[in-house]
Amino acid sequence: MPKTRQTISTLAIACALASSPSWAGTESGTADSLTMYGITLYGTVDIGVSYQSHGSAFSDAAATNVNNFLIKASNKPNTSLASNGMSISTIGIKGREPLGEGWWGIFQFDTGFLPASMTLIDGPRSLAVNNGVPLAQQKSWGDSSRAGQYLNGRAFVGVESPGYGTLTFGRQSTLLNDEVCKYDPLSCSLAFSYVGFFGSTAGTGDTQDRALDGTLKYVVTNGIFHGGAMYQFGNARRLSSSRGTAYQVDLGITEGPWSVNAVLAHKNDALLFGTLSAAQVAALYAPGSSTYGLPVDKTLAGTVSDNTSYMALGEYNAGRAKFFSAYEHIRYVNPSSPLSVGSQTIGGYFVVPNNSAFPRPKILEVAWVGMRYALTPSLDAFAAYYRAMQSSYAKVSCSNSSSGLCSGHYDALSLVLDQRFGRHFDVYGGVQWSKVYDGMANGYLQRASFDPTVGVRIVF
Image 1 (cartoon, one colour):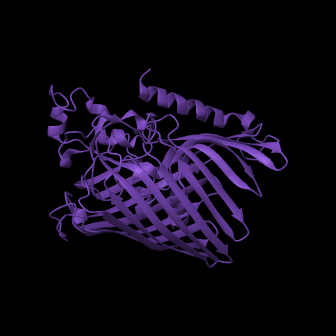
Image 2: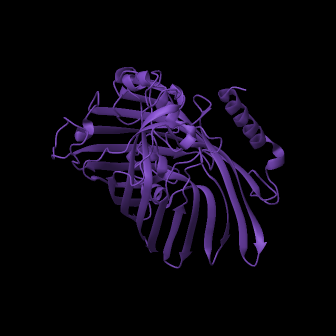
Image 3: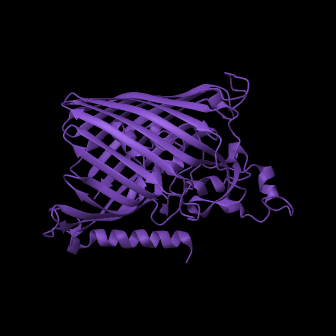
């Protein structure tokens, strides 16, 4: 069966289960939950319309179908259906069963999809379809840890105890991603939040590492303190997963209206996918080349690095208004264990690696401030300003757009309204403006974009 049809069939079965009356109003669930025998079916459907003053064409694989923020391929005005503006559309199951003496067994499995195209999110495929295509003609794209896997979101099992915390193993959101989305006023919205759309902030420098396979994760709360630790075991032989090891440590305090957090994260063999040039595509068909025979639809260019991040985040809850701020420092260096040409990685994609992209360590700093204000009990207003700042990591320092190795920065400003109609349905609308400068603008067709989006979200 073709993959697209199989995906649609899977979602159709899940939706049929969701509508089945036997799942609603059971003794083990709340009055409107879809729970039976301790297992809950849950999901989100988020779809809308987006306009970009400088955008790129609709994609059936990119996480929002369109590029809501300015990227290199952003070129001309574009109005389109768009998915996942405020949150990822998801279908999944989760469960919590008593094990005795205050312990519980837990599990959670879900996948993210695109309601506008009824396909699974596959960030690498959104890049691969643009291999060899001139920048001005490319469809929307974006790297992602969601690479077309049937379970491209979470897939873990574990145990929890009110006194001892929660220990889980499997494919999981990282601690850094959890805290970034918690302290982002827009909760990592893909249409309005810089740190939601560009996953490098929450992914220790690369979007693919927002969620990691083969991780052991522990979180605990004790009085005013909360924290956690996680470790990713080497996954070089698992084609569904990123390679390399990773570790993260998180510590926070919540006291009265204040909440602060600090996270330290490190990732070996972090990988940032990109499209192949026309010359690289030609090499796939040239006998004797190092990439001869690799499939063009499953092969991508990749920048490989060892990344280290430290981050501080804060929130002040003033009642109707909540104020947020954060700062992150990410250091990129060439990998200690370089990848070979044709290595197979997340989603089974092959990589043509660049293991020497950093003549000097690259420093990326990301900061934001913002607020969320309850205009009425059901209407929220959001405002946020984000800035990413890149140091020069060329052999000779530079601060212009002549090279992507020069210093530069990226600014984004967002304003959003969200009207809730009950627990399960809301309507949102907003606008974000983004502009890129100097070295971070190298290769961009345009330097600024104005992007309003409206949409609806159903949560069950």
